[in-house]
Image (cartoon, rainbow, N blue to C red; front, side, top):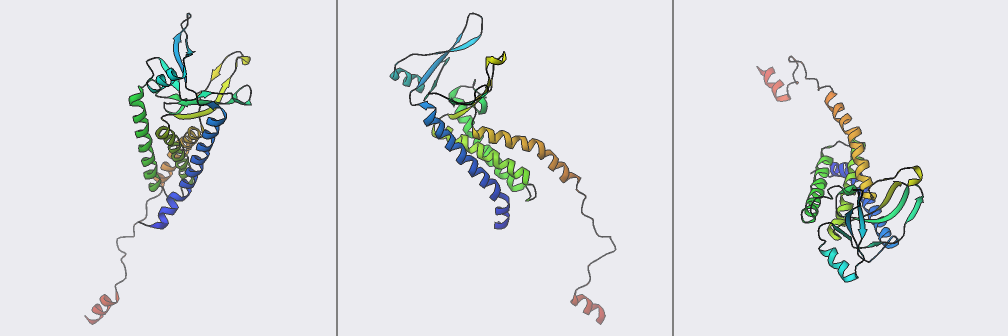
Length: 244
C-alpha cells in the first residue's frame, strides 16, 4: 500500500477528527462539572386536563432514584446527574444547560426501547466510521471539501460513540430556544459539539457531494490513438527487419 497515498488521503481528515473529538470531550466534561451535580434525577410523563403532555419530577429518596435509574419503569425517565444552574449566553435564545440523551442526535429514536436502542446506536456508529474511512480512500486529493466534510462526520460520530460506550448516554449542553417574551415558545433539542460537527459535515456532503460526482461524470474520456499509429519498433525488431 502506497504510504504517500495514505498520508494524502487520511492526514487532514484525521487531524480534523482529532480536534473535534478533543473539543467535544472537553466541553462535555466542563458541562458535567459546571452545570450538573452527581444526584440522579427522575421524572414521569403525565397528561394534563387539557390533553397536553407534561413531565412531573419524582421526589424520591436517593436509593429509590438510583433503583429507577438502573431499571426505569414505563413512562419514567432518569438522568444519572441533575441539572445545577445554567449559563445564559444570550438570555432570549441561547443557554448552556446540562442534559443526558440516551437516544440519537437531537433525541431521535427516543421512542425505541432502551434494550434495543443502545446496541443499535453503537452498531450504527461503528458502521458509519468504517463507511467514512472507506469513502475517504475512494476520494482524490483534490476533493478537499469532501475530505473536510467526512473528517467532521468522523469526529462527531466517534465523539458521541465514546459517551455511549463509557456512560450509556450522551452529554448535551447547547440549548437553543425562544422564550414566551416573543409571544410563543420554541425549543430546539439540546445538542453538543459532536452533533454540530455531524450536521455541518452532512450539509457539506449534500451541497458539494453531488456536484463533485457530476463533475467527474462530465469529464471528457481519454482520447485513444488512431488505429494507424503504433509504437516504434524496438532495437531488436529494427535489426531483424534490416537483416531481412
